[in-house]
Image (cartoon, rainbow, N blue to C red; front, side, top):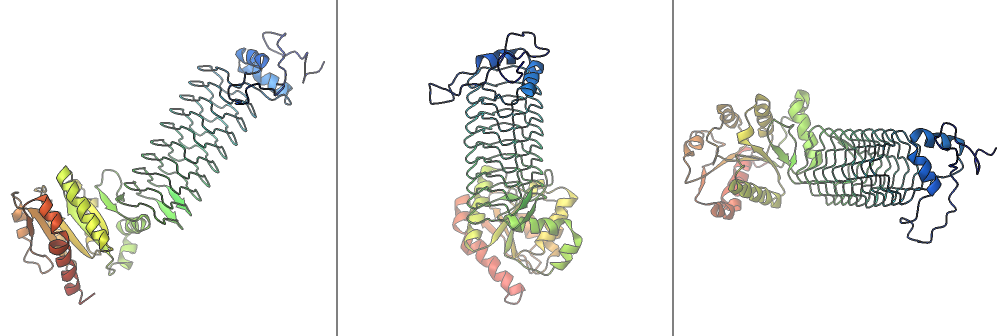
Length: 436
């Protein structure tokens, strides 16, 4: 009896009369995704994974054709769908844990909410597939095609996406912590708010991608391409970076500090890693102790909308002078670790702008930091309708402390930024360092 063709019985199957045939490959609708599944194969599938997998092992030459089938909510854990034609199939909410979908054609399929933990999807075609809210812990998606796919709210923790093609894919707010993205093509992908903690992005192409406020903490970035990418607001504490392409990338307000230790933001990813080493390695600090860079430290309490507007205006004005603004939120600066970090950075910046408005509870240790520096000018600011003038007045006995700039309104402070805040600090820096 021919086990690979017509007339073969399926050992262990509930029905001996079902003998799946190879699809004739004919589809009247050339759109392909709306083609009908092979009815005999579909009937066998309904008998369960065990019967299906036995048929696959006995008939390796017959490719499964389940195009357009409705398999939603089925339990297909461990099923062998390798090289199957599954375009347009509805697999929403399906259990596919440990399933083999390697080299399968899943174009336009619906996998929303599917459970694909440890599934093998290597080299599968997932273009325009809906994977929203699917769970793919430790799944193998190496070299898959995800062009135009919707992966919103998908979980890809520790998944293997090496060599994957995801041009323009929607990966916003996706959790990819610990994922392998080596050599992945993510050109133009939407990664806003994505969680990439500990992810390996070595050699990945993220040119033109939007990573606004993504979490890259501890990520490996070796020869990663970020050309024209948006990295604004990313959390980059503990990254490992080398040989990056950051041409025309938006690197504003990158967060260097770990969660819970205050807000320290800089505008350059590679400089951020340098600052991280300075803050966490004593020997590195000693080597660079005498270096005065183009970094300007901005201190203040910027939680209110008015203070945030002023902070952004100060940053923009400093950038126009080719300075690298680094801001620290004073209200959050309560841990000994962050105070030490501020002290370290304060000693190596060009000058400091300190807005004491809305910051009445500045720790005395922070005042000691400002008192303890000798070659870094400090320009205090305060809004005149506040009651916190005494804080900065106490510091004026020190030669590096500039007169407090008192502004009646936010608009006036913005108008005076260059002339009455930045210019005096620049002049004092040159004076203190002998023209340097």
